[in-house]
Length: 234
Image (tube, rainbow, N blue to C red):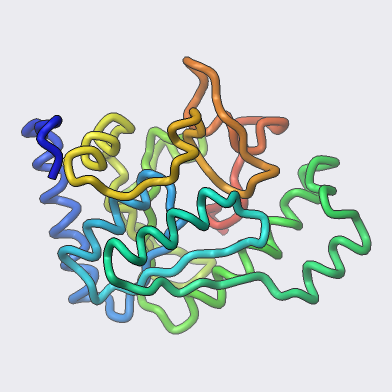
């Protein structure tokens, strides 16, 4: 625990609420799994799960285009928590077909091609990860973007046919970082370079002071519709 930070009562209450929610998920929705992108929010959720609800599986999607810093924090987190995370990768045949037809960076050319890339690298592997599960957990927060403005803590995921939980939904960015500092949680070092939201390397950039927290994701697109398909309601 860091001696440089003190948790306020509001954050302590949110920690307890998220902790109890995760314990309930592990008890009532087994088998449950946590989709971990190893961004700041997801590292908070990882810390809570490993401490209080270790029965919840933790998996991540290695798209094949992740920054080295993301791979580094995955390795660091596995050592820190003495736990292996399940890694899902896209089907190589799907990647080959996409690249042969469109080129390796075709996602810059149109929203349609970008979403097709996201489907191959994220959505289809996610479907494999969720197969046979009763619930999945995310680290999403309501304030992250216009598409997540009203994010319930629990919702039925019609597309994947299971319950979806967002136990950090009400947390602020400030609270996420207060938790990370207080408990010395490993985090992606790209955050120190002003990367607020981190995905694939070619689709992520640092943000300027005052920009929306997800402005660095698919920055060339309309901000009101910037999702990869993992969290879009069917």
